[in-house]
Length: 257
Image 1 (tube, rainbow, N blue to C red):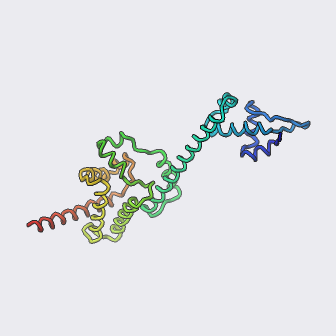
Image 2 (cartoon, one colour; image 1 turned 45 degrees about the vertical axis):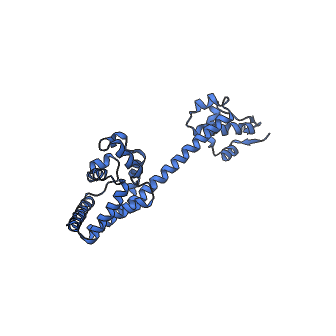
Image 3 (cartoon, one colour; image 1 turned 90 degrees about the horizontal axis):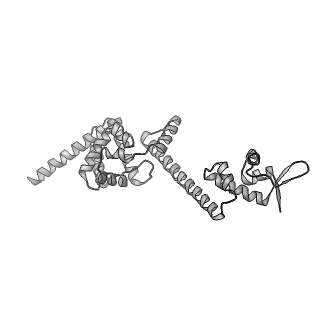
């Protein structure tokens, strides 16, 4: 049987020497052997027990509970615990990817982010999730189902998200240049918005109008955890769409007559 010093075990298992001494102090696991100088050594069996402790700690069990079940848990049960831990880490990594993508998309919309903005943005992404009660204030069940399935989210990185981001950026460029909603660029933006909206709302014009009204209200948008679009952007888009649909109606009226 092999024996290992406290330092060797700490390096082998990635456990601090202080933790090993504490485990010994509380009677969780003590080194199997001592030499004539009082130096402690762990056996191969001790190493296996320490690995069990490490896996059980991953499941957020207290040391007191680990001490109680350590001698009773089977290898199969230990593997289930370890699998659950790995699944949790995968979910945490996926969440981190989504949060990072949301920040990158926010940078595309804002142009830049300051360092101090990163912490609150990440905290909001982790803690703020719209509940059914938030959505029930404004939408019926069918409307919610349609939007939750199709609504682009900042934590996604697909073409639809990029299209909406680019629309907002194009409007901001129009505002910066002083282009009016009735300008050529404003009308192209209006048409592109209507095309994307038709896809987003599955041809449901009533839902589109209802959602647009929510979008125009910063308070309602915040309650539904929607990305805050600047009011001047929404006003430009509303005016551009009004001009576009008015012109479309006039053209159809001329054609019919």
